[in-house]
Image 1: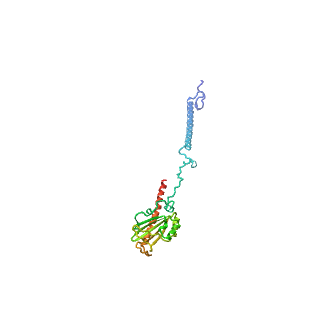
Image 2: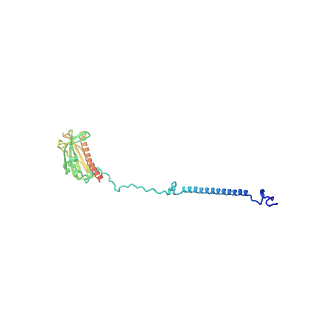
Image 3: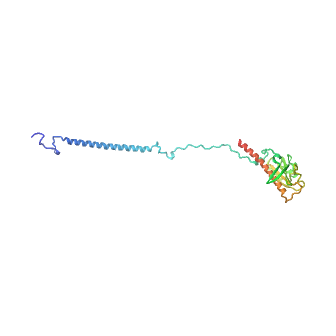
Length: 279
């Protein structure tokens, strides 16, 4: 018997003495395939892990304080810059002057004062009733143009001037006498104490009237001025209680005198306000 022939065979029917190169090659290829598959699976897992890490980093980056999508809580928001508050001058603006203040005090009532400034023009119209102006007079001796009983009240309260003017309409004449004092209190006392009448003033077209006959009298005061009227007929006829012409004439001239004194205060107050504004 020769070697290599007729001997017992190994498993699978191959002879033990000769290697099966085909089977060995298949086993080697199989192992390589398994190793490659293992590497591929491991690589995929690693890639997935990296992807998870990247995704996590992106999400975490979104929570970063540097992201514009993230704002501080209200407690940590920066305070808004203070807005400038309006400022006002510490200098208080005085109230506008009052007309009554000027005509109530001789120290403030400095506008020119005379019969011409107090009773300007040649006529006066009150409610469509026109009166022609006659004579006028001004004196620092207040007692010279009034009755004795009225003179006592004027002198007692230190009257400084008496200005008179006469007006006439349709046979009825009126004389108004304006007594000037330093203060409103003096003028008010003189009015309250008055007893008697201002003397009528004739001239410049107005004849003598209200002498030794009954006439209508009025008394009033505003500011430092007390004013009195006497009205009656130029014919010398007595004024009765039922008469309306003399009463109306006396009231019209008294109202006109009041308005002229008030105008005096308003003019001075206006001038003072203009000067105050300019300063």
